[in-house]
Length: 56
Length: 222
Length: 250
Image (tube, rainbow over all chains, first blue to last red; front, side, top):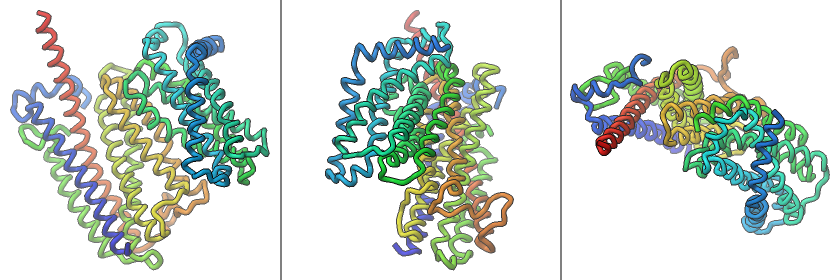
């Protein structure tokens, strides 16, 4: 592989990994949020439970 | 404390003696691993002779990991950890006792593998003292590391696949040091064999200290 | 740090939206500086550009693993004082470790590509590379340990002990180039010594570190929030299970 191709691959792979991971994290958050039904006001109050209270 | 340590070790060894897993299953498997290596290296005698030190320790790693898994299965299957928590035996003693039990079983395994590499890989031993010191250091390190990390993976059904993943990165320096020390003892490499051997004792000491300090805590969490 | 209410991007909040935009901008600027503005190296040629990712990535990985260790220690201290306390430290430990693993992986990949061009080989079994792989696998093991089903406090404490033992790997990797004769070069930058690279490359490297830090921070915050959501979901599932059992008993 030529130098330029290697550099392009390295930067490309890095950006792909980071972007994919970021999308996965955000996507997982959305999915679980949907599961929990968070987004409507009542459920949100249920959502803040004891483990996230005094210490957060 | 010594009394408690011996008590635990004797219990584990008695279980072992009755089931004969080490001698009956693990040691033969270890020998098979040595044979398989010969297949993998296409019976290249020079290569096997040069690599004997490392191959010995890899075989010990495979067999030893099985022994550690078993040492914890024996406890968790019968809920023994609950019994330990309620008994007067202190956690550091339990840690050392289990380590001693493993140590003796791995030594038995090595007594089979050692002659194995001498016979199968045409190894000649130049420095017996270094060899024994390295074997001792490596086995001590393996035992204490194995018990410490074994308890972290213990009490769960997935431990058989998790334990090697946790254990191998920790044991990699021991594997490295043991291989280099053995190779020096076999005369195939001119290296600081004693430095490597002492590194293993240091690793063993550090893990023993950490183990004694945290075992009780970790036991509560299993 | 709590997520905004009533929006469909569950882990977002006004602050992290800003952070996210800054992160993207910083990354793009890093690409501009690293790939175009900064010069090629006299010796390494274009390959030097790989270092603007490789070096910051491992530093961020170190930092992330240190954060994991510190959070683990805080978690152990907090949970001693009061049961079910300090969970946020445990979550941060997990989030930081995962991001650390991602960047350690990037370090290895970019390093291998760089090595292919400069040393002619993807891999060498020298001390720095070997210890870095072990670091990576060690924290993969940590992540696996965290996934074991268990009571969150128990799982948290067990993981915390592992994190505190495993952190010793970080100085071992970093100083391995000094302790053993290695193929990998010694540090170009360290605290208290004059840098061995100069000019535009030096500044590009420093800036890249900043950019990668911003990106990693955004990732850690979001991963933390997702962990919190996961715990919420597990608790609700458990509560639902208990409730249905109670109904059966009636």
